[in-house]
Image (tube, rainbow, N blue to C red):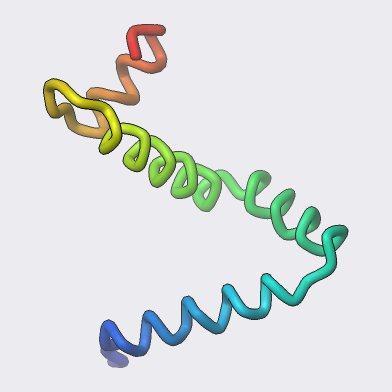
Length: 76
């Protein structure tokens, strides 16, 4: 069993970001398309964006599930 430390994860993330940053625009587009076409990965991105947006809104705190349910009904 391999246990990753926080430092190991941060190093891995930095390496991925550096490699992505080196890509040409056409290559970045391909990566973005693959992310969007992968349902699980794209949902992760959407969740992170929703969380970031929700943190900027003042008012009652709601769970991500409540927010998503409201968004689907056109309430959020």
